[in-house]
Length: 383
Image 1 (spheres, rainbow, N blue to C red):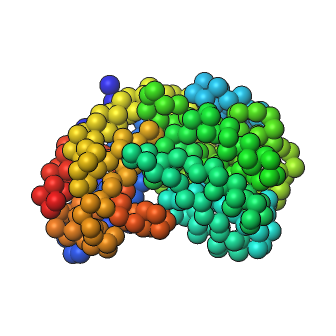
Image 2: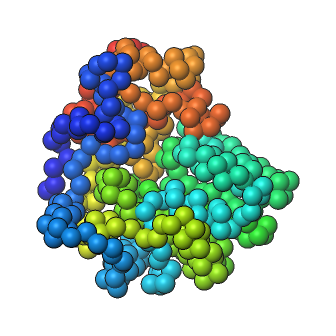
Image 3: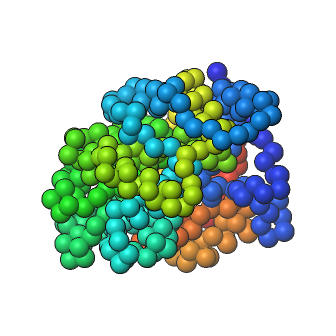
């Protein structure tokens, strides 16, 4: 049994999640998407071993690294990948930025589905591409893709690529095979590349199952760039390590060219060691984590049931809950301040994730159950 109940003191200089707000430290921070659990013991051991060497020279991934990544994807997702498909990268959003530059030109249109992780719009605009938004459709607390709107937007704007989130942050959807196939077929029909952010792929609750979109068929894989990492799964945000999975050689070469243009190739010794450790020995820890987080979902859904002034639908994946606070009739700023200044709980404003997120709050429930219950108690006192 691994320990997910201990409350650790994270208030150290530079910890973004626990930075002091409003002059007080009596805040429960549930906004930034990292966990309040210690990582798997195998990571601590691996990182300590690298540190103990005392020499931190340049390092590249070896055959064992690629073998472990391949085995993880084969075992967890039934996705068979080749060694050469794996392109180590420091971070998922860096990978997405390189893919956007490799597959599109300045002024080209790139589509995203909103509400979505807010760096998506930033990375499109900052690379001088036209941002096209297709709003997800919400019914009975569950979001789906509006395929009619998607196809219309692709054709009207001559979209060159879709930046896709799977599983979806912040609404917690784990896309079904049918949804993925329909989405991919539309992209194939219109010759649109898929850049798929799959950083939450390991954080999925039964009976749902993550399906890498590139695993659907060779045709889809040939038009897809998959950006993934162990960092969200094992709470390694400060150890930058990710992998881009690219089946098509020409696309892979183009993405690597963009990586070289920014003078960044690969990951450092600590990232390599951590990745190898979790893919070799982290599976039991992950399975226990998922069981713990599944109970957290239950606690949240009981506290904020459908039909209430604040409600939540159980996320199918991620450790992020999407709270519907529209029944309170408050602006995002008013909601944020009420929860922060009155309840002492810091949430993430829904409008940050797109206009359709207004009236919602994102809550990170990857914390000990005692902390989650205290946050719920505080929130309910101001409702």
